[in-house]
Length: 187
Image: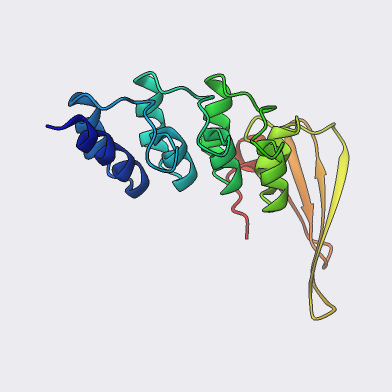
């Protein structure tokens, strides 16, 4: 097969999330760090489209986690821009530089802030927005949900080392044990 065709297939498959074609393209000799006509690498494309399994596969096959696309975007820029939190964490764990800047001087954190991806912002700015998060024992957080100026829900949360106490607007308190804390679904 023509190397240019194989390279093109790698980039298209990385965008579409076609894992089997990505694997075949690499096996057929596509350059894992090769760039498409826009200057993007397969890793940057997969990270931007949120294809986590492809991201992991490409890195296992020596994709450069800090490789820059045409305008200076790294895979971390791409994942942060679109709020792919798990991919952001994975890229950092594999050595991605969170301080790198694109050609306009913006970091992945800058893009996450612009797009209001709060988990990514917290993680990239040094907070821990994951299941390993801890707060000081006895700290309180109040959450008020409003619709058209009316209070729909008012929750006060107390975090302790072993549990979270949630008190709703009626005064009812529910205690979630440590193992239950992170199984609570967000709305």
